[in-house]
Image 1 (cartoon, rainbow, N blue to C red):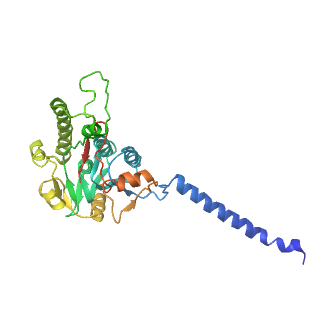
Image 2 (image 1 turned 90 degrees about the horizontal axis):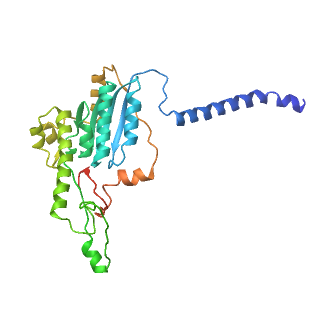
Image 3 (image 1 turned 90 degrees about the vertical axis):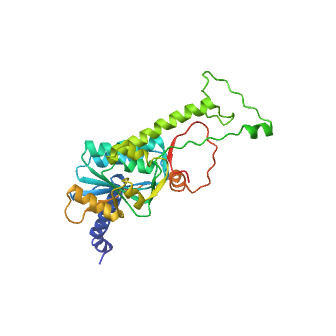
Length: 296
């Protein structure tokens, strides 16, 4: 038997092997480029997570828009485990949730984890229903601004701050000088306005009177059970119950198909988001920063 005759049976095997390998590589690439690709045509519920300190709204706003426009997505469950964060990012996600409900007629349910306070609660207030565990920490309806003053320290080390400005209040909040009564009055009016925006958003989302919300909007926190008594949430339950409620409200029969987008790994998100509230807090921040953030 010649060598050429021995190699002939191997060719179909090699061809099949290459086809299988090419198919695996193709599936791998499709899975990376289109991670949510599904050709089954099944109705589904999307699970999105709001976790850690809220610093950047854009990723969540994009996810809400993408799934809001998907006709196969009938409901979205927001799993909120956050002490809040920046005022503007919290407001942007809140508004994106409202658009999904109003423009795309999607059911949106909030499921509260360990903490869903301040900016986390602001987002939840925009959903159709809020479910919390009995021991969830929520509420903290208020605004906080933290400013440092290092004027005394600079004098001790012999450093002088020189400021050239146009406008009496241009350097308001500067850490290099004491805050004047006028500065405090101006900043308090800003805080009060942003606080009013929070109260109005809760009153609208929870269908409550402004006076009812003001009575609990002094920054205090509640357990899930206390929040239910205060009408800040609808039901007590876990994530599975939130998914079942979303399926019922969306009219999905049987066991709902739940998908969760994969999150890209980010060192910054890992440090600032998930661990931001655990790290030692340094009060030195330049400029005025408003936060819907539980302060401990």
